[in-house]
Image (tube, rainbow, N blue to C red):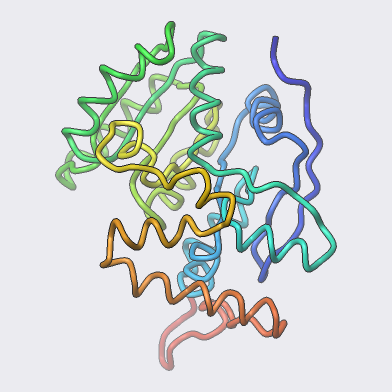
Length: 257
């Protein structure tokens, strides 16, 4: 039985939309029923990136469902008196795959490495009996291959597209492709790597303490520069003085993007 439709209340965190939903899976299923659209999983790092990169900010603002993926976004909403549960995108994507298998949805996977994609095509149907994978292509394609792959994807009319192309590429790619298309389109970051076993997710106790970012940093020390966005985000929320979006700060002699 499908989850009941779940009403969502759209809020703002540093100018980015966030949907406060009692049940994110029910909200996503209802979005599919009503014609489909783009899902974004918002965290503090993505929020700060969106303020610096107009294309990402535009994609987030245009998304049909934006869920609070990161503890920082949940904290920022709580400071506004809005209590929501953190909804990790990897968990929503997993639940959507399970729902897809049960309801005969057509599923497409795009992104990650060739080795990871090969593992997923073998593992996911075992974990989700009945899963219909109509397309599974890795993200390391030659530039000239993408137009043909995109046309093939659109012709398949999938019910669910999961894209692991990294932020901001996956969000802007989805925004460009999903218009006038049915189905749910969702960026899933490193979820494919975790599902395939190439990477491990932080232990539950670290998630409970909201320090999953530390686990990711220990796994990938090269992320330290990106992690600087976290204190910048916290200060922007506390001070009420977020950086102005890049669209408001065009370079001299150049037209706004």
